[in-house]
Length: 493
Image 1: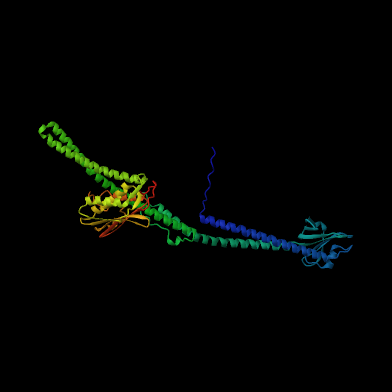
Image 2: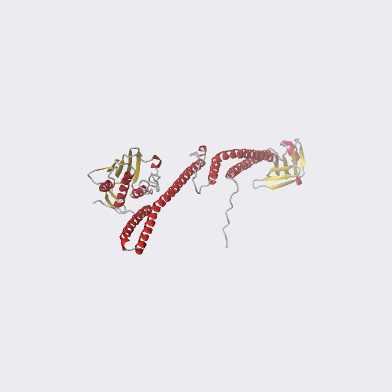
């Protein structure tokens, strides 16, 4: 079975790879430019040398029977010039030495390498070096040449100079590039260091506070690395807030478990006690005579009534939890056209009966305010807000309920002039398992599900619920779309 070869990862750092890439790229450019410059200059020097050879050949007068040595002596050529003549005297050769003297030259020492065209050739003269020569055909053939040593020398100096300048320039460039890249990547190293420190923090459980952040000077939004630093700081802010929210939820869950345990323990203990009492009464009735049967029957009836009451209490708690779960799934609401004005009037009427020691006021317009929603759940929200006002305010408190429309929204307000809500819990009042009263008294310290259920219902209707509280004034405000607009396409009657 063949397997795909794994891609080999780079072991170099990003800084090393960047420096190597930049220096290599510039090296290729400089070497190419140097070679190109040297080639062009060498070509120019060879053209100049060919021109000098042509001028030297034009200045030489060759007769029928003179030897090459005599001809060179008459023409006064520059040092290094060679001449080969083929005439009646045969093939003779001569050259001008470094002191300007004309000397004869053995033709056998000359080895020609023919060029491509026009009689040009390269020649090697034993003991003298390399030459550029030109052959002039005619009644008597002449070959004139000059040494290429000057061209070779100049070309070598050019190549050496270019090589030294390129090497020095690359060293300077490497140092500058290393400095610039190191400074440019400094924020990235800061980001990596911050990420490493955060990665070492224990984040799985408990209260977690992430204080590590990329420094402000490394979060410049105008640079790519700065954007990465800013994004990491934003991510850490979100993670920290999420962990804080997780911890708050865990704390609330613990509080809820304690509250639910307390709520369930009391009715369960009552059920158990009254059940044992009923069983004891039945056994006594079986063992005693008819004269005590009536008393035992009354005791058993009272016990069963208490068992029923505690069962209903537990059922209400479980139904609240089930309602929240169904609201989260979005499967609980049944839409229809709802008269919010009538709903508020009915809820206040019910609250007035339950709280006779409070002053209940209803303020609504003559025209009904129609919304699309679940009438039963919206009535539950209104009843819950009124019940909270009754339970958490002293006797004589005025509770005012108003219904109106504003900017295309239906607004239901429940206002009271009671002592207000503790500022420390206002921002968390609609969270699940949140309790304004930390006690477990049945009258004031519920399970913390009422307002969270109200918020879930209103959110499911596409609305929102807010609270504004201060000593002497507390207002719960519910806002819903005023026009029937729902998945059920509800219409007003």
